[in-house]
Every structure is written in C-alpha cells, then in structure tokens.
Image 1 (cartoon, rainbow, N blue to C red):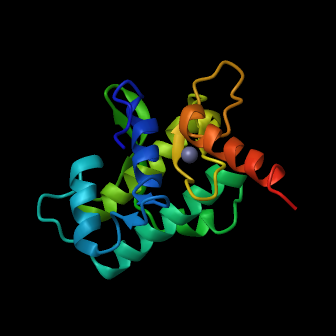
Image 2: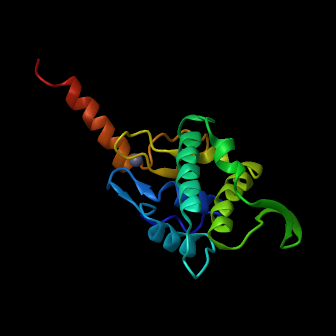
Length: 174
Ligand SMILES: [Zn+2]
C-alpha cells in the first residue's frame, strides 16, 4: 500500500518507516541490511552506495519498533535510548532552523526518520498519526477525520472486518 502523496513529507516518512513492516502480509522491508539500504535510498535520501553497518541496521530496527509502540499506545519505553545514538543536529534548512542529520550515509538517513517524527510533533500532525487497532493489521495511517477519532486504517476494510468478526462471535450458536 503506497503512502498518500498529498501528505506532508515528514508525515509520509514516519508512516513509510512504520509501515516498512506489514503485519497483515507478514512482510518486512527491513528484514535484511540490503532491504533496509534500498528502503533508505528510496524514502530517506539514503546513500547510493547502499552500505548499512550492523550497528545502523540494529539502530533502524530499534527505532522503528519504538516508534510503532509510541504511535500505538503512547508507549515511551526505550524511545530515548533508540534515538540517542542518531546523528541529529539543528541546522538552517531552506531558510529556517530545523532538525537535520549530522552525517551522510545510512546513519544520517535513519536519523532523518526520527527528525521527521519530531517535526510532525511540532506542526501538530503527530496526533493524527495512528496505528490501526485491528490486531492482524497494525498499519500506520494519518487520521484526517475532524475530531481525530479514527481507530482503523480504513473503515471500509478493517472497521467492517472487525465489526463482522464481533457480529459473528456474538451470533455463534452456543
Ligand atoms: Zn487496518
């Protein structure tokens, strides 16, 4: 599933990173260092060389894991530790102060994901980034509803699927 092209870049980057693991399909684009390198090149201005060290690979996986927990339940456990090692600085970007990667390479590209999360929080879009409530989905999405009330990634798919399951459970013969 592609990320909505109308989303602001920091939101799109956070969603893409969170959804690099797909619970429903059972796939993980970051399962290998090569997979991660390709993803970083495509989504986070990662290096063309495609080299990801073991340390960078582990840092990226930990960041994604903690990012998903924070989005899903506001679970802050381990997030600071996951972000601490990332090379982030404050720099002038397009005329304004912004969070930016210190380093080039894969480390910098991974840092860009954490910087995007912080940027989304600053502009108020973080509160609309959610993880689908369906246990077999857990897809990260942007809630554009007026009162931020969406629980499922898509009412038509996950919402109905869950409702159908609840209905079936309630109406099963005893
Ligand atoms: Zn869903």
